[in-house]
Image 1: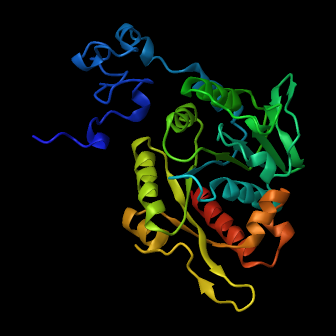
Image 2 (image 1 turned 120 degrees about the vertical axis):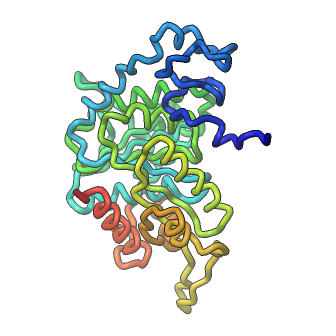
Length: 326
């Protein structure tokens, strides 16, 4: 018989598999944990056999307590890098705050922390208080946390293995004192990796609203977004919806629209229809976006009447419609 495809190799939920476990892992809650033939050679075998691996991570309860006053918890994901995920995260955060909502932006893209630049906070430091780490504030409405605030040199490379990254993510979720928030946006690395599993696991009891997935229109991007959606299904993470970023460029001189990234397979909207997930809207290519990111400004502040600023605002409306449904 043909070998099973990698994604079909095990029906065990991803959160049930310890780090470095084989694909055929029976899961930590299984009676066969640590005893099955597939457990031979796994570094977690003794822990699973003793039953210790079944015990819930106390950090899950700590995260729940820390985020109890956060109304909406939203992950921002992308199938691949370069689609504008962090830019979208930054502008969504600005947009929530502009609606007189208390918003937080948590940057867990450990190796590529661009959020401080995009929020105009380069050079700021994180301060410790009796309640934990204090986020850095853009203004009275918008709080930000990123490893970028902790680097002595902004050009330093962060060369960390998975466990150290996951340790920092855990610390961000358990130690940052956000206070009451209307929305916490969590900007994640591209793809599906250890960091994503860690975030979903730590937030499992915290009533996470779900994921907003960012893509560009062409099939090369969409093929990875389909994987991202399937990842969400496997870890029981609701998909709030998909944003098609860089969706067409309108010439400022003649108003001709050019599809720079041609939607050869119908684009994100058609994919959403096929995969039965909400489509949140399109954000066009616009030079104002790059300038706003470099300047650390919101699009609504830099170019309030532009098509791209109105597109971002429309996406925020759709996100709120999805998260606030009873």
